[in-house]
Image: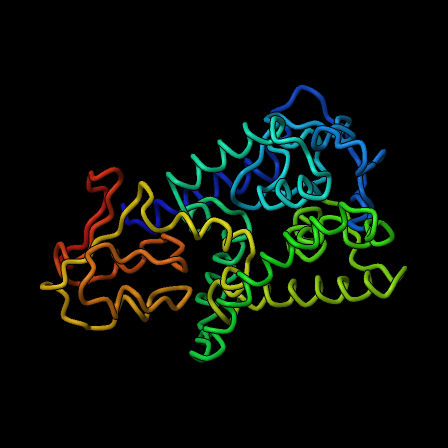
Length: 332
């Protein structure tokens, strides 16, 4: 079994679990797509209430958050999971939620992120799966893909971290009275601009709220959300395009180095054939360029392990979990 085939199986399982896993629950409540501009009913920053308490009517099987995209706007209720971790941090900052309510979720996130890093992006994220499906469609239509210029690739890498910081700062700022007039417009801005907010309800058979012209701020974020959706759909032509600017991926990427999963390169066996660079869906150059450090994982690597699968040199590349070899390259 090839690594890619195994990855496709796991991606498919998690795609259906996350999007339709609510059917595992005991009760079903069919709701319309929620307006992305509205804070939850009873939203009051000054009460410092427990996160998502007002959303108790929206059920889920597991009352927790995943590092990958699992959206609060999935309309099938109960959902399998509550939302993604980026949503959790954004909303918790806005509500100035007491730390005692946050610790269990933060601890779970740290464990999952440490164990897998951006493995969540390459193997478990539904948006990543849809991106790969678009790539498969392109392949069967015998269309070529496009690589981004190095300057644009570098800009997008910086942009995703800047956007992550921006989401955090805005989420925190609207918690204070001086910005109270903008709370409705800027609430969970990461969700407002996320392609999952539009795609997941559509896949659930509902029409989401695409845009709002109620205020200049909402017009701006409506346009930005549509732009990000277009960027995501451009994965048909540019491999994993959205992954290169995804703020959730940026959040997880800090755990890509020094985590439980390690990708090692035997520098003496590397012939610099360039195959690893050509097959990387996010155009990461680290694996090709590194000449000294054995662990070649970087923040951009989504751990699809395509490089290892295609490497023609036996034992040149190895994937290890807690020091135990899981996969290694071999001569075809």
